[in-house]
Image (cartoon, rainbow, N blue to C red; front, side):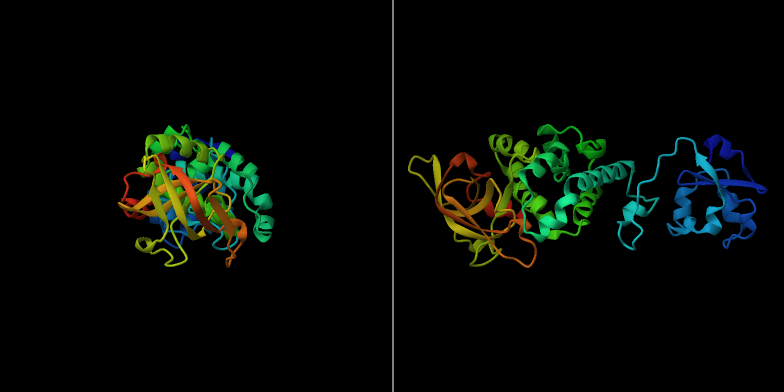
Length: 352
């Protein structure tokens, strides 16, 4: 099919010679203007221009696939990029993906979605359904592959400064972490969940998404340097351990205790946590404990004093939902997140 420059299209802007551009495709609407349901004027007003934004403000996204209108296409704009593949099933794609003109989604968003989808299709989808059915956790090899691809860092892309400090200057699709907004986050969530394996997808990012933010938001630089880059690279996994059998997510009513040693160098932790997503395979547990100074958040590395048991839930065991027991678990005080007694505030501010 012929290619035209926008300057060539601009020459066809008279009432008797009207070309328009929609989504990089060139249409000759000269004869069609007499049949246009909206009349001649709207077409004459945009003749010779790229009217993509105006077009999608008035029409459905699939209207140009209708053979009556598809035949009006006479070529493409020189340098037009190939379109991404979109699923035809109703509601299979998010609005920001199939809607061609949007005030919210930019080229950065589309590049990001294309890259995340490619990673999912290459690394996750081939085995996700089987793993979800068989209650198999995301493997260490898979997490390393996702880490190398920048996928795990992208889970925390709203905190661009943290991502860059961890050594990731670019996210999938070449996106700068500092330009990420809420729509990039939405895209990542959509692409992870579209595989339809909710237990397995929670195993990928459920524990990480809530267990890591308290560390880099409120933890010491030493704690951040040890944990955050390793998690982003897929070498380590972390989860959030707050809920308990006694009161669920009643944070103020937790029973788990942390007692500081006489020399002030270590904590001894005792207690249990329940319904901990990702707990079965986590190397770190961001844990709320009661101390002499109030509720305190402590990162507990997996050790001889930590025992995890799988909990049967209504969805796949691939999520790694665990019952966690701390029995005389000794942890250096350097693993305390922020100030002693401020754990309730930190737990409330995980997504703040």
